[in-house]
Image 1 (cartoon, rainbow, N blue to C red):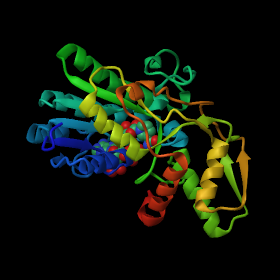
Image 2 (image 1 turned 45 degrees about the vertical axis):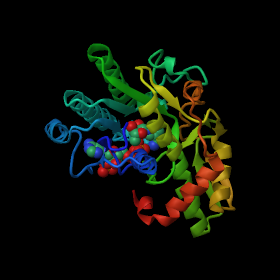
Image 3 (image 1 turned 180 degrees about the horizontal axis):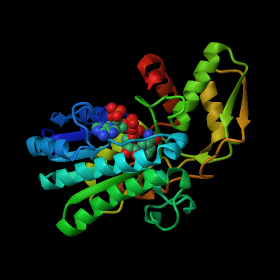
Image 4 (image 1 turned 180 degrees about the vertical axis):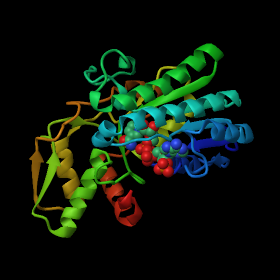
Length: 313
Ligand SMILES: NC(=O)c1ccc[n+]([C@@H]2O[C@H](COP(=O)([O-])OP(=O)(O)OC[C@H]3O[C@@H](n4cnc5c(N)ncnc54)[C@H](OP(=O)(O)O)[C@@H]3O)[C@@H](O)[C@H]2O)c1
């Protein structure tokens, strides 16, 4: 990308999209275009085509999506499939039709098979059954990723994808039932501290192992890949380090300053037992994460405290 290339970041008010905009600005890119959901509904083919015909961006980061935690994914199955499938197809297709030089699609490590080898290499995509709790989301995401691959094969485009692990950081979603584990814990412990609750009950038994990447590190990788990677196979984005939900919980309680007891509700689902990405491909390309978990949680908690509206999302 040239510093004055026209770059469209789809989903710029979300956690990933806003981090990509920050990173692009930090690196001196000056011609970034954005549209809010209200200005441009990416599920509407007519609106998306009109936008691309008018703006003709050189580069596109596709960070818009309907995302959510376990409950949202299990209950709004049809919405997750329809909205993600529609917006991906509309944006990727319109980008291609209007001469976009390069597009980067945001996948997610949760679309790898439930029983994938650990750590999960990029090559394990579609090698066995999906995690049932987010199958609809995964099928939509896999379709977007594959559509990029098929355009590359059929029309010689240079459309790439990145597969992030669990993300956290500024602009995260702290909704009580529709958020991911780390922001949910930040909110839960913050509220318990404020209210003086003697105990906090967390979901599952605390044994699942997870990996977390600070979103600004992901954004740095996204820009790096746009400039340095071509190929249809996705690139995993993670730290390569895992932490148990129990240890994560203790760390969040420490950062937030909650001193009560932590209990476990084993009637609630654990999700996949272990989820760790093989990050050797990104490392081989010359990229490495830089924000350690405790530092990232501190930065996220500061963002939570300084942006009261975030807690209402
Ligand atoms: N968060 C994670 O832990 C994580 C992990 C791995 C991968 N990812 C991937 O990263 C991408 C972005 O996730 P995120 O966490 O940044 O999500 P997010 O914070 O919810 O942001 C998504 C953005 O997309 C916008 N959007 C959704 N539907 C739209 C539509 N029909 N038209 C226009 N805009 C629309 C949303 O706008 P509104 O809010 O106004 O609807 C929001 O600004 C997704 O592809 C996700 O799969 C995220």
